[in-house]
Amino acid sequence: MLTKATTLTKAGAAPIVPGCHNRKRTIRYDKRRYYGRHLVENVFYRLCDFRQVAIE
Image 1 (cartoon, rainbow, N blue to C red):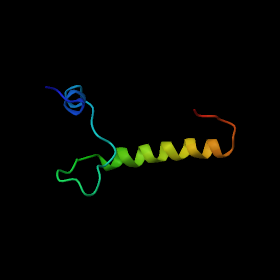
Image 2: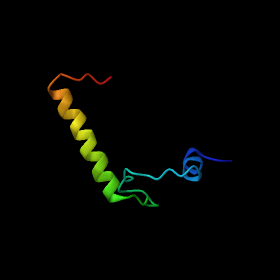
Image 3: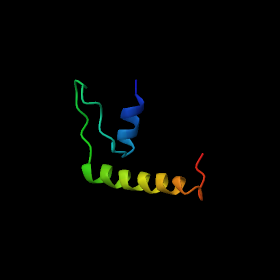
Image 4: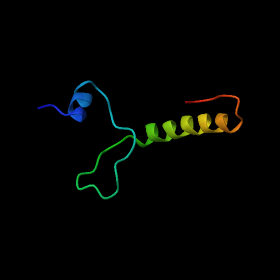
């Protein structure tokens, strides 16, 4: 039986957000991609602060 995680891994997807700190099995992730994703999210939040862009 294939789970969603194994299906995504076989498709070439890689985890970007780190797992919980109390997981028994840690998830490896790319810290550079996580930092880039964080910066992009911050841009959208700043745009929402100015109320010029509405994100639903």
